[in-house]
Image 1 (tube, helix red, strand yellow):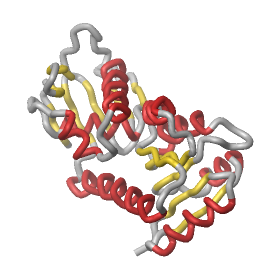
Image 2 (cartoon, rainbow, N blue to C red):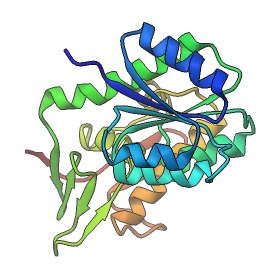
Image 3 (cartoon, helix red, strand yellow):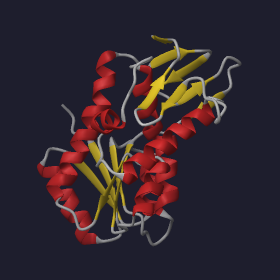
Length: 234
């Protein structure tokens, strides 16, 4: 079995070495980069399974890069940063990151989180359910695209895909915040709740929902969310 590739972008050589050593000891293949331009050039040749991205880069804003990775690459994106403020974590998750790890970190935790996200990614593929139709919409989880009844396409991020798939696989069932945290991973708390609110808000916008009276993704105040569409997987 070929080794999964993890790309590491960090301008600190010690951090790159620590992450690379831990991941390779765990059976992964790694590529390391000190500058965003080098990292972006590599994406034209290789598609990593996971990208570990620092936010404080010498040549480009890390958050902008995270947003592009989430929308265009479809890779799992994990921010590894010294920025510990709640707003930084929320912004990173809002822009499409799948996880946020604060420096200093334990390398074994990073490996564990990489594996956890890969397990989540693998589970849907085993069901061979990559396209779902619902209420005039088609969601394609291979190309990360929503298509409406007129054929207009709207891309969605990997992080948004996790939430949308969760709803589409459990239609007309209440999903609590605790269940979302358990199924999607991440630490429970204010930053997770706010990130989920933002992802759901963005999905509603892409589904052209009335923000004051959404018909597909309903908020059950104090309990969670429920998806009311008729779903057909193919």
